[in-house]
Length: 85
Image (cartoon, rainbow, N blue to C red):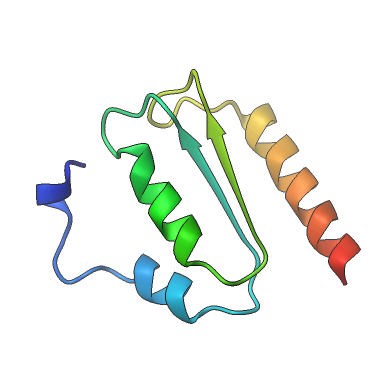
């Protein structure tokens, strides 16, 4: 959604990201998303101090990720988190 349509107050994502220190977070965003600008994912990622990964796909729009792509990203992320522990 455009910035002007974001609810006020925030519905929780920012507060969770700011306070979470332990729960791993994987963010996947399409660079060409016309609904939610990619900077929203980048801003949340920058705030996070937990184990995290941000995947920005350059040729993807809003919600255009295949199930196979998402599954591969989750598997890779979980493997990297497991290696850290």
